[in-house]
Length: 212
Image 1 (cartoon, rainbow, N blue to C red):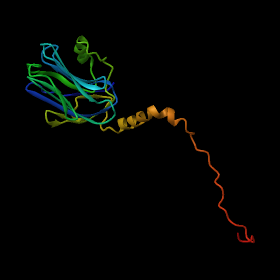
Image 2 (spheres, rainbow, N blue to C red; image 1 turned 90 degrees about the horizontal axis):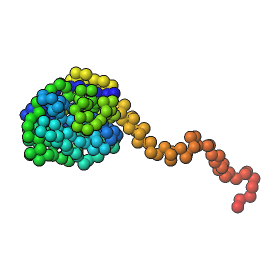
Image 3 (cartoon, rainbow, N blue to C red; image 1 turned 135 degrees about the vertical axis):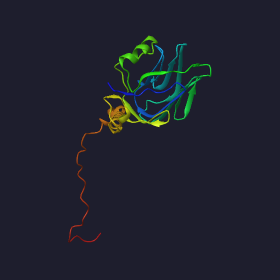
Image 4 (spheres, one colour; image 1 turned 90 degrees about the vertical axis):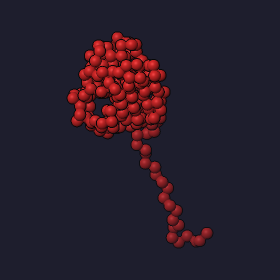
């Protein structure tokens, strides 16, 4: 199951996480960062084909949904912004944000920023909050153009990668096959190889016949 672990995402004053997402997954983890106090975290996932963000800072869970569908195999620009006062998620520059009273305190990060999957430790608080994705669920798709607090990061910056590769070509090939999936019933109606058709020979008058 795929997973990439990066150095902690510093969300204490202000945290901005940006990437381009391409997937057909309707349920998948995208990003998880644990906080310094036990049980604090920020978590972003795909839930029923849309982006969802969850922040827990010891004062109750703040839950945010974005209305732009993302599970369509097309690239989508994603931005997550968190500070002491608010939480905002944006898809293709369509933002959803909490009120100023929604978050109220900063999240002091602890441990690694996890992208595309969860480990057992990260999944524990999510299961306690019944936000439930099993540990063995991971993103099938592609995260590109990763930027953390304005700094570009790539796989070379990861502390750990599991079943991840640089570039998106493999995933794009899979999407191409998926895209034809619904049409398989139609395409099988056509013969695998078209039979050769005998075309009539062109008319050539026989020599010696009188003109018409």
